Length: 104
Figure (spheres, rainbow, N blue to C red):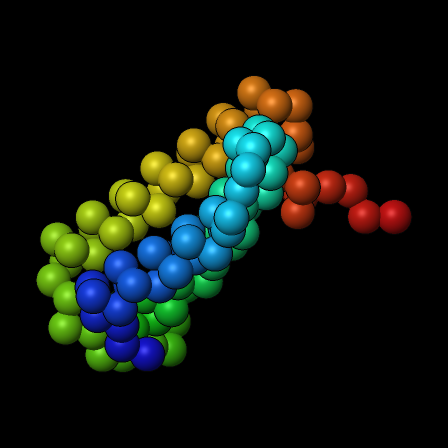
């Protein structure tokens, strides 16, 4: 799957616009964290798809024409956002890794 920078920018703007809606009051920290979790999940899927198109998974051939430099910029941006989400979770008293919780 190929995605252009213009398409990615449009998708991000649409997502942010959809989250804002028509608010009369500011969002709570918990609402903001919920939005950030959703973005983080989407970016995780995007990174998986990007890694596959860059030929970085076991059975994938490189199909992307992105330079390694652009790939690294994207990877660093995703990692920085994930670190920010983790720190925000800690600051507001949320579990930063609920997917790692015990299974009963």
